[in-house]
Amino acid sequence: MTPPDAKAPSGGGAAADLRERGPELPLDFNEVDVGHTFEMQIAPVTTEQLVRYAGAANDYARIHYDLPYAIEAGVGGIIAHGMLTMAFMGRAVTDGFGPRARVLHISGRFNAPVRLGESVRVRLSITDKRGTQRDAQIDCSLVADVQGRQVASGEATVTLMPVTS
Image (cartoon, rainbow, N blue to C red; front, side, top):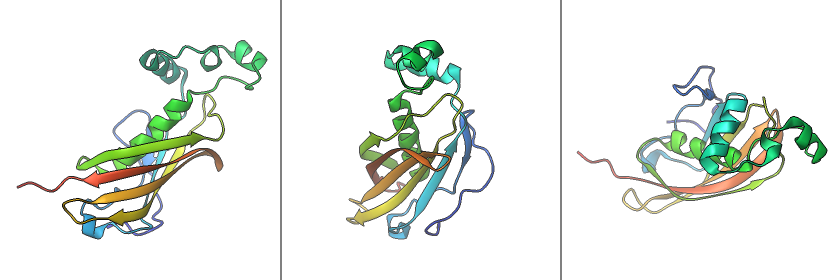
């Protein structure tokens, strides 16, 4: 079981864009406690990642790839898509709880832009749990930051699927 406020160890994940992640949250509803946390550090945002995301989202706004335009537009340089930051938060939920989790709800607010080359850290904290092993719902808060500067925050609710034999 992951104790509340566990720190993420150094090490890598299998995916190329994952720098490090903390221990997974308990998979048994009875072991999940308010205060458990999961942290994930995403590798620095790359131009290739922005291009791929633009294609997937059909969002080709020039502030995401054209430096002179982004400066002229007043955003201070190339910035990542806000929904890419939201995807990082969603990934923390799915990676934190593992394959038995089903996301029932996720929402977010963007507080500041993520810039090309910046690395986002997402922290998930369990804020509430209700139900039983069969109808469990777990609420979480999400905070995404870049070197201590909060760039997004949100909430998620998940359920853990029962173990089948």
